[in-house]
Length: 130
Image (cartoon, rainbow, N blue to C red):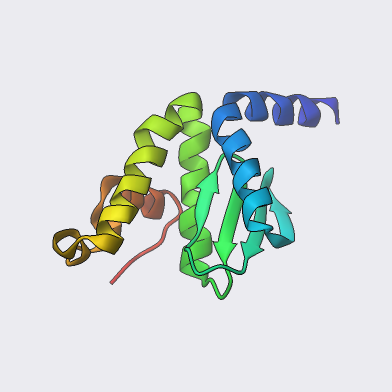
């Protein structure tokens, strides 16, 4: 039992920057309907802003599907692998890609999941896109 708590503490410290930001996003979006799986807290928000993974928090848009759930779990795996580098290697590039894909005519024509951060999250969580 003690090893479980040590693992939780080490994982929280390893992912501390993105988990703090994740907690702030959770509070801002007022996510509800929480479920915990493998030391990750999954919540649902009511806004139409998409889903996001930050450390040990996954905030899903209302009406999410299994692919979205699994894809965001893939981002959690990336966070566990990269630790404090996650925000620079995955988080910021993914955010910029999302903004460009949403608001740019050129990038909106490209498959959203073709970007390396999204493609890798799909691969880690076995999501197959057609």
